[in-house]
Image 1: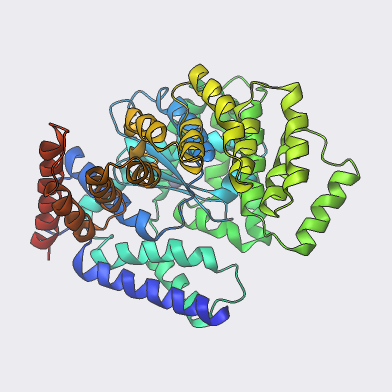
Image 2 (image 1 turned 180 degrees about the horizontal axis):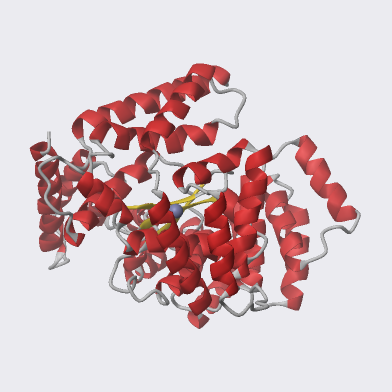
Length: 479
Ligand SMILES: [Zn+2]
């Protein structure tokens, strides 16, 4: 196992090196004069495509849906943000961190969610990151200096990847040290002036969005305390330097706003417990500990019981999970989280048909819910109702922009329903989203050679092929 991990990391480093020499976006080349919004967006899109290929992005539709909603609630209350594009995503990493990329892509570490004490704390970090984007702190840095040159951009991605593994004692010391060096070289350090501005605007957004500005302060204090004892808080401090004056300033600023006693929505608590359950190690020790807590009645709230059920289903104790989820559902039958968790159990136990009606009804009541769309498509696929799955996913195809894994479900549905010509196009779209330009090109070329009844297919595929050619051309020009 140890050898496997080291080989894996070495391989990934090699991939990163290859990317560095061939397919990295041009950001901050010396010839660039001014960094237009259009250019920033193009660079950000390209960077995100590549990040998806090697960063540990969490593909859980419920958690994804939640962070998008929270992010957009804040975006709506920052007047400079409404004109920009935003996309929020989750990095599976236990450290307290969040970061903004060019183009409004904001990554949130799982540790930030599990270690927040309330939703205002979590929102305070998101609104701070949104402000870094609207104030164009990244774009300005890119314009002024070639801080993020091509190799260090690759190193940044490698650092995100390897840092995830660094809690693992199995990792080779050399690889860990190398990763630290890379991280130091590549992580985007904001200046103190940038931090002060992001804090000022962030707190304003936080208040305007109905949160308690004291969340920003308690979060800062938590960071400060954690940094004394735990190394995993360092990253946020490094990328967002936390000086004594910064805390004092933020405290004074937050006090200018009326404190609010906000009661956090149940959804926040459920998501926090789900993240915790999905990122915990599953072994005999952790299972025993969880069972003990439950038996002793220490898991009192609905969200804690829900988290326990998710953890137990990961431990393959399906009957325990089933019993708890059904109890929870009795007191709150409209809650999608319980139905979704039960549907996942049905898929595991090869009885997907049991959950289809419930999930379909819930989706009818909230048609834009990504998690319900994904769950219903999974149920249909598992139940070999491929035509229903294909119809559902094509109707919600716009969701792939922030949930690319829906393409995977769609290609299974298209294959099963006998739409072979569509499979190539869907696989092409998936690879393109994941940054594999040459792989995507091959799929689209295969797709265009197949006869289809869809009158728009050829135009759609040609448009994607010319997009890819343009991306490749731009990348070549920069070398
Ligand atoms: Zn910052």
